[in-house]
Picture 1 (cartoon, rainbow, N blue to C red):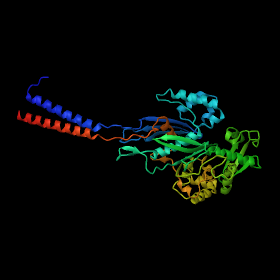
Picture 2: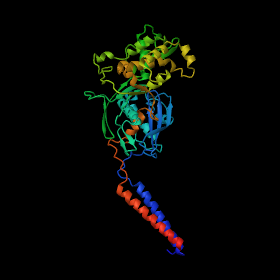
Picture 3: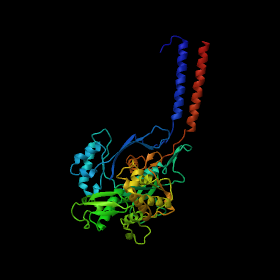
Picture 4: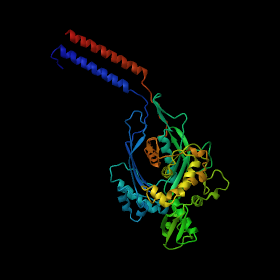
Length: 475
């Protein structure tokens, strides 16, 4: 390379030395060894075909933030009322069309007809492959999986598993790790999941996870047909079959002066109402349910839906002979637990006595009073809050055996951190390996010798640059 004069030559040298100094500085700053970060996932999508709704959730991982641990933010939620995906069993392509419109609900499809479920899921898979997404398959989760993934979601969002320590430059397990239990109430089923105290043996409802290098044994059980919608159907059916009247039946949980007409045939569409029950007379006649606003009668009728006698005197049993260790720790109650108590303004940590008093008072209010007091509330939901609230009390107190003291450990909420609570996020974390089994490796700082070499090189290049600059001025 030729230069016109010494000035140009000196300028080139100075520029090169400055460039080398900058490169050395950058290299010294980015030289980090043994960094283990959670894998990056930009987007994820879950299609939740529930018993009372169908939702499409899209989550986004922001992996550009410093020390980001993969916490997600919900960017889209589509929740639409529909007829249920089980209605498409005889017309599988209709399921694909409905998915495009984010339509509703899978009412116990697996239990009713597994072959129909397979055909519907195949059509869902076919439809999803038409879109530019990394589709991994469609299947129906078990209730126990829902419960376990809900537990993972809560504790992941609350950083119970691991938390980044800027001081130590590593992810560490919190010294006083506080693991929350999960209480989920859906339309067809309900789940309880938590870490029992001590060594628990002889129980089958266990989910075992290895997360961030630690083993977790979680008790989880799902009660099919004990979801909110199915409970209401079972309650109505029992009131009808026990009534002396064949056309007009008292409903203690409905507000006084509220009437609802049902078809007997509606109880034959779900296995939860025992379609072969001999007490259900043949025919398709109408029955009118007449509200009585009887708080104590409502609670008594709901308790009859549980078979508490199957447990005998056992203290580690809920109902129907199902084993459960004693509840321990704090719990987050979400989904229908939260929505019902939110409507009744009971999500602010009220005492059990205050909760019972509020529910009892609400149940005595007339339909006219409720309609005028809550003009914006869905008129189909409004008369059911009394039954739902009494059901929640029965489930938590009589079945799960929370008491006056442990009641204060239940938090009714739908968010943990900045994201919604539910099984969807826990499922996505599992299938995308966002929570690794192994413990995160320590993030090591710069090696001292590397820093020394970098600083020496920078000083040397700056000195040479200064000498060149002086030479330029002399010339």
